[in-house]
Image (cartoon, rainbow, N blue to C red):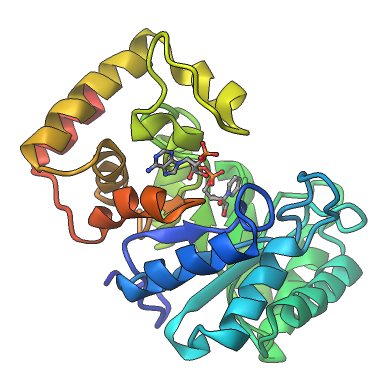
Length: 308
Ligand SMILES: NC(=O)c1ccc[n+]([C@@H]2O[C@H](COP(=O)([O-])OP(=O)(O)OC[C@H]3O[C@@H](n4cnc5c(N)ncnc54)[C@H](OP(=O)(O)O)[C@@H]3O)[C@@H](O)[C@H]2O)c1
């Protein structure tokens, strides 16, 4: 299993996304997915305080609560790496000291754990001095409530600045970045951001690794997809998206695997990427993703997909 950059966290090659828990997957479905994922060797869970606030009747924290109940009832806390985030929940939508410290306490409570393995700054907050924000994260590490820190949705410039502040002040440093990155959405990450991550020895944990479902191959011309994400995912169904699907179809056949697993393996084999992050709301969906735990594309296959 890959080690997450400079940490001692040994993570599986697929990080399981938690934004479906309490949204498109109810508690029973979520437990089943968590059981099957860990039984297959997966150990890296991703959630956030804000998940899944967008579902009817929810207010946020539902995903953490489900993971917490699963950990208490059937999971093995010491066998999983639990990542969560602060900064997008209503009332906690900034990176001020009090917000970060209070949100962490609430996440610990909902998760039912005494520490968070990887704690993300979910969204860069340009209105709060980085010194204030990063001192709060550092305090969480010193207090033993968080093991490692990470950033999400940062520009290259702001990430470099944050790392500089952490270095200068002697604070615990970010060890990973969670950006949007997948085969049909590459521009934002490749280039300055990826270079900054590489230069500072961070790991990348890309989100929307399946482009919200598009890279499973279920969105095709003339096909109606029943999904809460259909509107967002079908926007990738253009000429470029179709070219990507054509090569994914071929490589999936070559490796006798799924389109989704090939798309995830491509991501896993990109520089700095430790583990692509993807969600599944059913066991059937999960079983299409799990081959990425061992699937290796040849360099020629990786290059071919990159060239599209
Ligand atoms: N840091 C951030 O700002 C941020 C932002 C977004 C997400 N995230 C994290 O990244 C994770 C992954 O992102 P995501 O879940 O939004 O999108 P994603 O992983 O790109 O797409 C997952 C969705 O694709 C569909 N799917 C998965 N496997 C499938 C299969 N085998 N066959 C058909 N459809 C399948 C399911 O949706 P349907 O069945 O509903 O179509 C599933 O929920 C999240 O869970 C969250 O933890 C982080």
